[in-house]
Length: 323
Image 1 (spheres, rainbow, N blue to C red):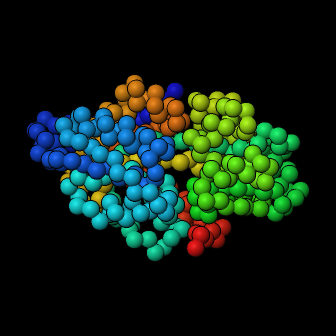
Image 2 (image 1 turned 180 degrees about the horizontal axis):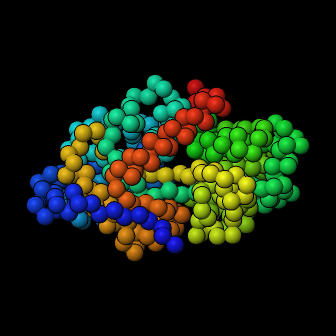
Image 3 (image 1 turned 180 degrees about the vertical axis):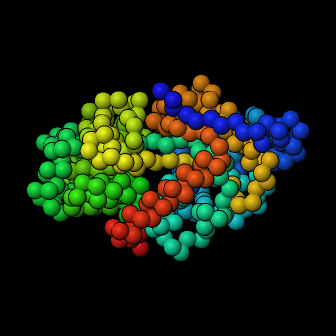
């Protein structure tokens, strides 16, 4: 199975041959800003990437955590930085896919204020329930929701979160109505699910795996177009009658707008090299992160398609952010 896409370009090869790469790379320290607390999945992968790139570039690449507002605070900081490669961002679906449609008053333009460098990976979300729930199949769940409109309780990590948007897309495709209860993060949501206060939810694979492996939760379906190799027995929504359903959590490397082309080409090439390293592949597999790599253009096009998709859904479902 082809799991990652890598693209070597003629521009990158030419620049490498002429030595332009060395002239355009940062000279001292590069900060890789992460919009989430230390220890989370995005942070762990950012630190792995930073360590590898620091060796390749011959300079320290230091992870800086600027948690808050689901990655928006970090994105605002990087959008204002100098485009000299000294400040990069681990962009996330929240900051660069969902927030632009959810919060028109953002302090940055996800399209104009950043330079795409490379997609690092995308992970599925899992439709889960506590293992003592009587209905644990997708067909049974849809039938339950249709027989009790507005009564079946779905939790999420918060209004406008990736988990919430996955639910709204499911509601639209399955033509169902449920009771959505937003939480302030995944931890309290999972606690209430285990306590029987919430029946179902979409949750990121990184969080869900620890409960699925322990038997406390059951996975009903997953949200990428193809099955994760970590959960080969769990069907996707796309193959279960909802063709085209896709709601991954993704992250990738971006910098401020107007970064030099040679620098972007070098960074893209090196990220692709890192993603092909066996120890990095193994670490990504632990998080279910797949399909990273490829050209900077590929990542830019991917983010634009995500903004358009979620923007349409937010408008149609009239989703509002927490005040």
